[in-house]
Length: 137
Figure 1: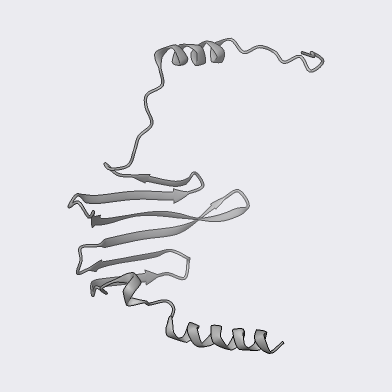
Figure 2: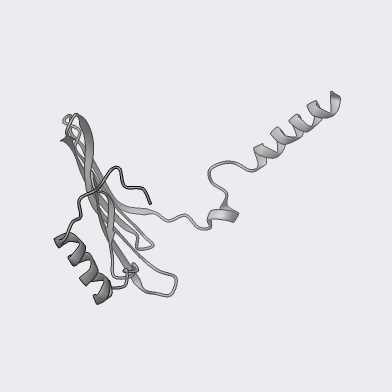
């Protein structure tokens, strides 16, 4: 029993030296916020933006939206920063009932659908077969 008490006290003492959430060895240098604004309205809409001294820029706007019986937040925004290789990164996004949809030049895009598959999909759409619920394979 004494060993558990000792381990518990040792854990608490060690936790005091690893102050959460800021550990300069892990996070590195802190950067100043050059500009910041935030607005919220009683109707639930909001907007915020900020710029930091290391080139990060963020802006977002959101408004409540009713879809059927549910209320969702319709959000659009963007953020930009410079990648470690020096490439400027800009991401714009929307988030609503269709999910999160980011766009950016650096984001991967799916390959085009092959022509044969496009023809097969068009044929299937033009010739729907009736389902036979009693058919067994």
